[in-house]
Length: 382
Image (tube, rainbow, N blue to C red):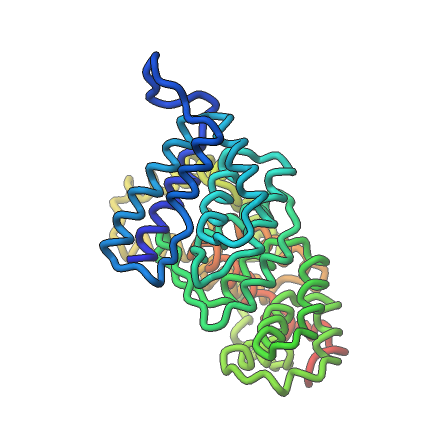
C-alpha cells in the first residue's frame, strides 16, 4: 500500500508541472500565500509511514494531494515557497522527496537542481520513496548535475528492492546504482567507485567493485587487479560477475565463424539507433513504419515477423538481437571498444527495463570483445 500510494503521488508531482498561473481560481478567490502554504505543510507532513495503518495512509494521501494542489494554485509563488521550505528542511524525508520531485518538474535552473540534489542526499529509505529518489537522481544526472553522492547512497542501501511501477521493474541496490553510474561521465564514475573501495562497510566495497568492473576501462581494470578485496567479495552474484569480467575466457571460434553482419553494418546500425523519445518517435514513423508496411503487405505470420526482426538490422535497440550481438563480437576491433562503451552509455535514457536490457546487451558485446581480442590482458586473470 505504501509503495502504490506514494508512487502514484510521485507521478502526479513530476507529471503535472506547476504552472505560473493559478488553476481553477474564481475571480474572488486569492491563491494561498507562502505563510499559508507553510502552515499547510506543517499540518500535512511530519508523518511516519511505518507507524500508519492502510486506512491512515489512504487519508494521508488525500491530504498530501490537497496540499500540492494548493501549491499548484499558488503558481510561481508556490514554487518559490516550496524551494525555500526545502532549503530549510533537514528531518522530514518524505517532504524532501516530494518537494524535490515537484521542484525538478517545475524549475530546471542549476540552483534549484543543486538544491534538489542536496535534499535527496539526505533521504532515509525507510521513509523516502526510493523509486522517486532514483528517478529524479537519474534525471538530475542527465541534466548535468553531479550525482555521485546520490549514487553512493544507493550502494549503502542494504537488501534494497526498489519498485519502478511504471515499468513493473524491481531493482536491487547494485542495479539501481548502475543506472546512475552508467549514465555518468566515465571518468567521474571510475573515480567515484574507486573511492568507495575504501568504504568501511564491506557491502559497499563489494558493490563498488561490482560496478567498477562493469565500467571496463583501462583504469577500472588496473584498479581492480591491484585491489586486495576481490577474494573477499561474499555475494555470489557480485563474485560471479566480477569473475566473468576480470578472468579471460578463451572463446569458441565456431560461435563467431559466420557473422550475419559485417563490422561496417554493425557500426552503422548502432550509430542510427534512437536514444531519446523524440528520436524513437522519428524512427517509429520512418524505418519502423516502412518495416511494418512490408510485413502487412506480405501478410506475415507471427513466426515470420519474429524471423524478420531477428534477421534484419536492429531498428530500435539491440537487446535480444542474437545475430547482431554475435556479429558485433565477431567483427568489431579493439578500436571500436570505446564506441560500444559510448553506445551503452547512451542506451540508459530512462529508468526502465528497456534501457536496462539495452545496457546489458552492450555489456555482453564488451565482454565478448574482451575475450576474443584479449583486451586489457595486463590487468585480467589468465
